[in-house]
Every structure is written in C-alpha cells, then in structure tokens.
Length: 494
View 1: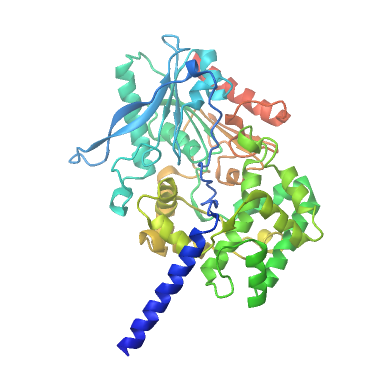
View 2 (view 1 turned 90 degrees about the vertical axis):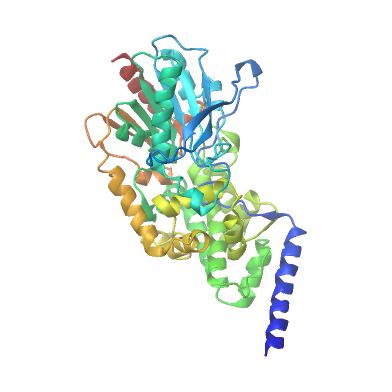
C-alpha cells in the first residue's frame, strides 16, 4: 500500500513539474485585475516631466511602526517627496496621500496636474507621502502575516498625522493649513484623514474615494454594463451573448478544450476545478472592467487607445458575438494566460510578492470590494452568474488564513469606524466621482452635511479629475476641475 502511495505521489509531482516547465517555456501572462486594482495600482500615475531640472529627490521620514502601542518603539523609514519651488511663506500645505502602489513625485513635478497647478496658484508647498507596505516604504522588510497586522488604514492615517506634525516643526510652519488629496483608495484615506484628525488636516479632496466598505460589490459590474450600454446598446448586448456562448462551452469537456485553445490559456480547462474556472471568467471579464474603469483618463494609452469606443469596435467587429469577446481578449493580452487558481494563490502567498499581496490583505482585513457577478442585472443582461463572491472570500482563507466570517466582520468594523458613505461627518471635503467609474457606487454622492461637496462627473472614469486636462475632456469634467479649484481656493483664503 505504501508503495502505491509513493508511486502516486511521484506521479502527481511529475505532472506538476511538467506543467510548471511547460509554463516556463511560454510567454505567460498573469496581469489580471486584483479587486479592481491593476498592477500599477488603482490610480494611473501622471507623466513625469522631461525637464530634469523640475524633478525632486527622494526623502525619508522616521515613522512609528505602531501608533497605538506605547510600548512598541520600533521605527522605519517612510519615503516622501516635496516641492517648495512655488511656495510663498504663509501659503498652504498640500499633501498627496499615496495609495496601494509605489509612489513617484510626478504629482508635484508636473504642473499640468491639478494638484500641482492649484498649488502653484496659491503658493503652496506640495508633498507626496508613500503608503506603508508599498513601494520602498516597507516598515518590516517583509510581508509575513504577522507583519501585515501593521497594514491597516488606521495606522496609515496615523502616519499621515505624524508626518504632518513633523513637517510643521521641520519647516516652522505657523498657522498651517494642510489640505490632503488622494484618488481611489487614497481618496478615501484623504476624506478619513480630515474626519479623524480635523485639528491637523484642514480640508480634503477625495477623488473617486470608496468610503463604503462592502464584501459583495455587485454594483461594480452593474456600472460596467451601464457604461457600455450607454455608449452603444449593441455593444453591451453583443458582449452578453458572447459570454453566454462561453457559458455554454463550459458545460462539456470538448467545449472547455475549445475555450482553452481559443483564448490561449496555459492550463488544462477540461479537468479544472471550479476556482480555476472562476479565474478564467475573471480574466475575460476583467478586460471590460479595466477599459470602463479608466476609459478616457488622460494618461498612458487610456487617452485614446484603451477606451470604451475602441473596445466596442473590437466587440462588434467579428463575425459573431463570441468572436467579439475573443477579439477583445486578443487586443488586450499577449501570450498565454495562466488561470490556474492554485498557481495564483501560490504567487500571492509568496511573502515577497509585493504590492499585490499587500492590497489583497487590505481587502480581506478591512474593505472587501469583491466584484462578483451576483447582481440580477449582471446575471440577466451581461456576464451571467460566473464569479460568486465566495470565490474571492476563499482567497482570504487560502492565502492568509482569514476565515469567511472574519472577512464579513472586518468589513462591518470598517464601516462602523468611518461611518460609510451616508454617515461621513468630516467637513470642508469635496468628493469628485465619475459616473462611468464603477467605484463611484461606494463614494459620497449626496452631501452628508453643509460642508461636504459631492461632484458627479457625467461620462467620466476613475480619478479623471486628478489628471492633466486634455482637449478631449468633456464639459462635465472641465466643470468639475473648476469646482474643485474653487473650493480649494475658498478654503485657503478663508
């Protein structure tokens, strides 16, 4: 019996080795969206200026590891940048709070960026602060679970508060007026910084900030469908029919083989487990999520290539609706795609896997944001019921050992702590959101008090207001940038 078990174990290892070797010999793509986050982070960075004279140097700040344990004296170096070239003594202080990726100083070097241009207009000194556990700002030098317990939004906000107080002393600011900025998750941080530390943070701009935590974020794909349907109903309907064809092919082994070959999947789908099939669906649907989330943003190729019109051109250009889904996939991805669930889990379990592991931890530990296909709209008119929320929650179990019920409890605690989108109680805060941005569903869309200013930008995408203006900007986006500037100028002059 033991001999048979040994032979079986060797056979399994041989199969795994053969598959790993085969993958290593191919051009393998794993660049999927992770809870709405691309590999560069949720906020596309603006271009850095070609003129080297306008660039600024890296700085480092000695930060506390644990702001809430007086007995813990450990510190670490947090990266930041500042630009005082346009500063007028007595002027305000602008702080761009870093989010879930490595930061760079383009925000304060590129004077076409609203953060920098408004700062120049009011004589502000501008800062960018990198988020703990991202980029070069790693407090512990690793990403073990016992280290990631220090990766919480509360610790991050305390970092912001500590940093501001230290800069007040370092620059001898008198009557400082710090205004925080941020986009996406860091937009939520900007709003929360004003709410939690009102004596330190004077005002805030919270672009595309999802201040409502939620486990089953069904509204995300609702917006993706609505954005495509609004642009061209035939495009949304064609995608729906194409997804239904995929669903039909998934019902038998021959169909799965066809899908694996057609979409250049690195793995065997014929005998794949459910999580690997969900991973396949996530990869295909992720293209539509990516394009809608960033379409038209004035950075990289989202300006005029990776846009909703271009996506629909590919979707509607084939001989069939299924061909359209294939065309979109081939347009956006090169090389074979590794959708094996266990491969993905193993890559994120790697304690040196970087920003992806850190962001996934935050979603499991605080926010959720799991973009399932569980809504009636998506089931009946878009992708079908192909990615259940349990698929995402299971990743918390498999990677970090955080059980199902704890994920839900953690999200409830987050909303209790920050009061969500309908209970936000900060003041002097502007909340810009794009109507085509799936994240706007979790933002502040109605004023929660007389000094909270929601701005819904019609037809705009994720964090578009943060990026440099373009001749292609809509009237709504231009008006939003003017409104943001007006609020900031009023706060500075008050």
